Amino acid sequence: MSLIARGRGLRRMATEGFGKSAELEARENQTFQQIETAQDAQKMQTLGAGAGIGALYGLKAGTAGGAAAAGGGAAAAAGGGAAAGGAVGGGALAGAAALATPIAIGLGVAFLINELFD
Image 1 (tube, rainbow, N blue to C red):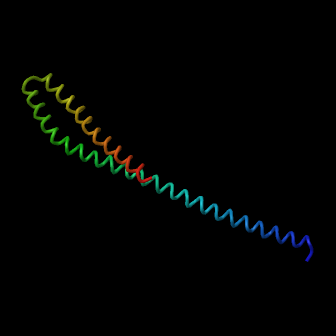
Image 2 (tube, rainbow, N blue to C red; image 1 turned 135 degrees about the vertical axis):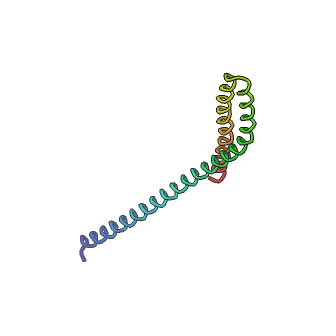
Image 3 (cartoon, helix red, strand yellow; image 1 turned 180 degrees about the vertical axis):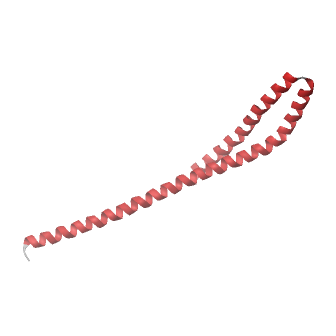
């Protein structure tokens, strides 16, 4: 076997080795990307669950407060039409604000849980 033939053989083996190394790196990169995607999905799921729990709490608390506000709105309607319009518009805005606060708290807690377990 000549020196040139030996060099060609070594070059072929090196090329095959680099090819296998590239394949392993590509698989590793793909696995890493899948893990990152799964972690992002889990974080979004946790945030969604936190917002949902906050919304449920807000709706439950808002139902009790909404009944009292509706009673006040009915009393205002008996007293005068202009007062009733103001009470209803203010009640809707207050209801939205009352619902937004528990949702924000739920999102905050979910964010902290994500950071704690990241």
